[in-house]
Image (cartoon, rainbow, N blue to C red):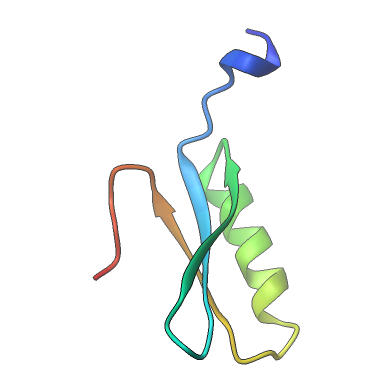
Length: 59
């Protein structure tokens, strides 16, 4: 499979202190996405990071 057909079903999402949500990136595995989210969260900013699968959303 080439890069244009890669399956990347896991998202890292950021929510800022105003409640705005942004997609940070897409990843092939939950573990990879969680590692990125954890590393961003460890920076100590007021943003919240989480992982979700495409097609699911956090309410």
